[in-house]
Image (cartoon, each protein chain N blue to C red):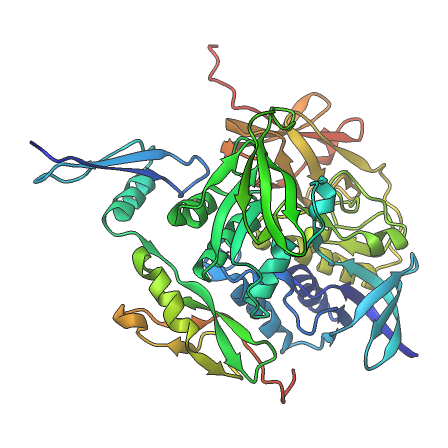
Length: 426
Length: 128
């Protein structure tokens, strides 16, 4: 059995792990990245479309280009990378068990850990679509990897369930590769992904989008032969008399992502309503020295924000190693509460608030709104306001705030989205 | 009788998604209505006159750590040529190793755009 010691162990070599590792290494600590695939870059390697990097690099890149820029930065560092290495256990004392073909079992002792495992696709079972259990049913991201990285074409005739961005992007991609996309079926009354993708992925290719519809049955003996779709009411119940049959040999599911929590749970990390770990403003979880960033923490829509979040996690992990003698703070932890029209807020707690602390709050609205305003409030007074011409659940809002510690009352702050106040008569 | 051409365009510039109508009568410039900003007007004008898209696809690789490599055009090409372009590059096989940014198809279909590699692909013999 191989034994390794490091200062900061980063689990996952996607965009989040790469940014965390590079930032941690700038502090002069030893960094080890553990990646289960044969190469770095994570899911970006299969997201071959453009639209990445507009915020971070101020130019439009494809997913692989965005990843390559970070991979290339590793060359000038002494960051160690173990590829083809699967982490199978993480303990609260930050010891890691991993396995790979060349070393067998690897035991890693680390002073700090950054969780950067990303997320996993929800599959057919997660939304209980009835019917036959035949071949030809894939999560959309898996089909994306087949087509864009492994050179396989998994479909000739397709129905896509869910109008998230991956689903719509795969509708275009499969069409360009010669498949016929017969329908995209969405239970909501609007496309779940970006307008840009609805227009450029579906409308450009005349792919029908069936809103307020769901698949009620998948038919097929060995391979998918078709699906029955039905219109639904506002509680997503199929409406009698609206069903019809669509032929296809493949069904793709693009119905959301869930953070990979297995290792977090093994380490005893507390989970939150985002689906990922509860963290404070340092991206530190409930287990001291274990940090989290990227899609394992909260499912992002822009990789640029993953990079920024992971840089903080990586830097804070390195600070933890250098300064682990830092005692508990004098002050009680401040609870961050999601208020009006806010589904969740990351971080859930603020533990070290000074006048210089810059806190990045990430949150999503529960419902679309226009002319809205974010307010950060404590004890009845508004500490910060930010205007938004429009907010939609599929676009995460990020607000970087510097709060006055004296203005925080009852160790609670609330983040809410409210209508932009009209100019009042004095 | 005047022949009026009308096009309905959904703006993609921001999440507002304005429904823009472009109408044109012979002999007069197109009228653009329904946009709430200047960028939307410009987008709708361009989309009406000459819609363009990036080429985003994959190409075959021989001797690489993966059998395909993602590629893109270095600028947009006419929307109606995207299918031809995908078809054209799909018949070309590249040889690993390949570096990101390498021009893999110069002057694609005489459109004045180059196709470039989106990432590095190592060769199987010299594994990374």
